Image (cartoon, rainbow, N blue to C red):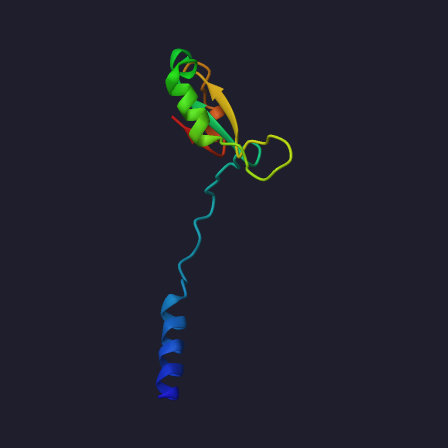
Length: 95
């Protein structure tokens, strides 16, 4: 039984190895933004209305058990007109 387990594990390692060559010349740019920051793309009217209040409430609640008020995430608001190709490189975007 122990030999069967060893053979099965060896076969699993051999099958899971990937010998396919990596694509050379493919460049993926790094992402921008701070850790814990969420960029929200929303119309200004929605951001200042009840919808914006609910978005801020659920995406950035206060962290409990801290002596001072601290938010879970930093929210960054942009309108669709401000959202450009440079902004698309942000880490966390909600449209």
